[in-house]
Image (tube, rainbow, N blue to C red; front, side, top):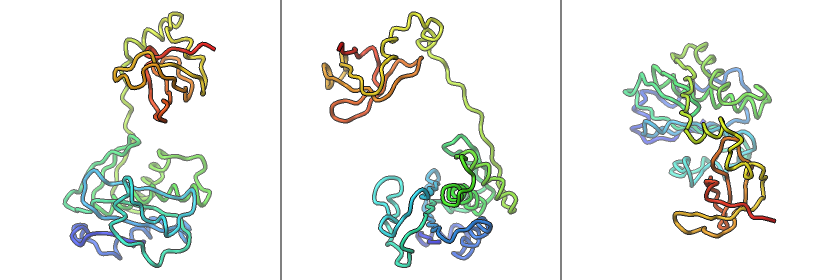
Length: 254
């Protein structure tokens, strides 16, 4: 395990390096982690907590660090000289300020978690990413995705004595727009029925563009559309992908 931090960030956790390593070892006790590398970044940012498991392919020291995107923070430190030639990688970023706990957080998959301490948060996040490692590298948890990873992680850390609560929040029902309602109720009057027969690669022409940039240009259909959609995914000549309103397009006659 590699720990990256500014001195005050580690101090805020109230823990030492060996304490953090001990938590990871407890969580992964029944998992073969011989080919796993874990890098933990302790940085301020209450809404920046995240984890990523690079476990579908092999990582090497050359791509241990990232200079772009959400993990560009990794470039603030040198590449550890003792990395193995190839490995699977779990990256985690946490705000270790113990004064923020207990805390409640929602993840991008619609789950809400409540952690009593920083230790509980670390254990749960690591367990979630460990599930991906177990699935893709060890062949465990076949066909299980993010929700299963949350279920497994929550059950594991609670069994290990960590104080965590978690649940999947009910989805909010989206209001059905009046236009979508008309298309569903009166499909025989669907003004875009010809568009719904198009497949990937079909050509359309732009007949309206508020910016005037693509007016009169041909665009390429990227994929077929749903029965109730009023937009279609197309690619313009400059390579950009758009969800373009179909009433701004016309079908090119062959």
